[in-house]
Image (cartoon, rainbow, N blue to C red; front, side):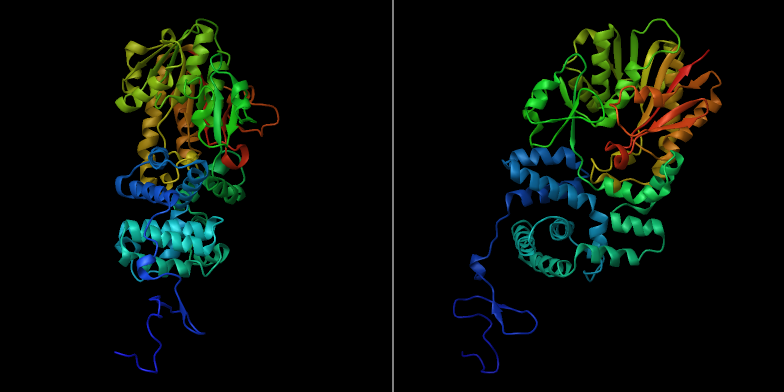
Length: 502
């Protein structure tokens, strides 16, 4: 049957559909339905699968992504694209969701989770990556068509076209304008939950920084971190690492940064004598191992009370070899204890052992005064490592903090029981939250008259390279140290070195 003269045909003579743009003559799509792309670009497919694992199985992106890259045989370029796409979409999830919520005619929670993940990937390409709009749209829709279905791909196409209609700064201003408080505005604009913004601002002030640095800190949290390497003292060699393309580290001796793809290609990494470890964590382990004990005497028995996954234990174990000391790496979780054993594998076995007690058990009389140096890298909120764990900010809750601080204080009490008079305890958290850092130390000192805070700032400065910004904050007769991503380029690590005086 012929079409009425007052209507254009739905398809042209080659079967291609009209483009239903507004105004102007009708245009036709570049391909017939049977020819439209239904395959997934490998790099985008990997990123999509990572988001699905994180959303549906509470997986950790940094564990899922490397396996997905290997399984799909991505080359260096595609692996880099997949990493930026997956991590970036997860980091900025709250920002993208606030945009998408204005463009979808239902609550985001009512969308198929796979559709929402595809929308987040598309939004990140459109607003934060150097991907042409047409490529971001076409590839995301093709991914959705192949992985979710033809029906949802239409919704994804329509929503992402509306996302692409505005620049990221425009979206940021519009989203921020809906906020009812300064913390909420910053959280919306910089993709952080409001409670974390408040906690970070309070942490800045508590550790001697101006509250006005909050924007810089949030931006640093959203920047992709570099890969930091450490050559284990006395066991690893830095020269081959630098010859492989790494750059010398600027924070601590024996360190390097690497930005050339697969880090397993760096000499020493597969053998375990060179390790991937944030420079802040390196500094804390060096400082505890090298600080002079306030009281002379034996310095042979060391304890890492909360050792998993083993990065700091490997550094301490390396020093133990040089000092003829013995390290006990304690980790109650069986899975994490296996990671500790793997981390220590490059250290001669005579100098370490792994135990699996609850760290609080060290408060018992059987352990009183047994150790000369103790690391308490306490379980914490992890607010200092948000840039390395892109999904973590959306999983954390302010209600978790009181339970964590109670545990942190109990572990510090246990370590203080187990250290000898004149020994040293290093209390460390990967958090700048004042409740997990200075307040724990202050409460501990008030309850333990025989405890004294050492000059942690001096101990940390002695292991850092010249020119590093200062990080110490006076607290009574001693000092604590707080590192910051926007100041030091490290995770926001906190440290207090304490001793037993009687």
